[in-house]
Length: 83
Image 1: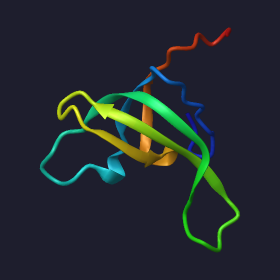
Image 2: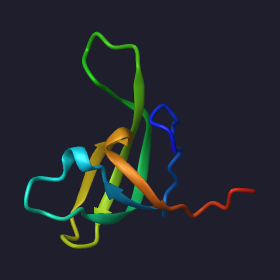
Image 3: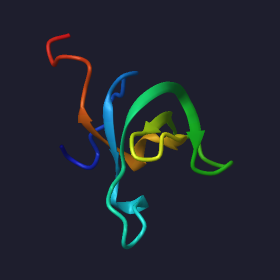
């Protein structure tokens, strides 16, 4: 997938943390998408660009964390490519 390609996430997708948010000395967390807030994240107050805010329940910690879509990566989608 190219960097400028936008991934569409769905509830139930399996995702992982992007390398940019994994702290040094820790492996990537994996989790399941619990819900999605469409176009709810803005990088700053002056930005017109929005992205989805994705709530992920991490398998390792059992915590739910809301993150902008660009800092997670899709591992397995619940949707088939033909859906």
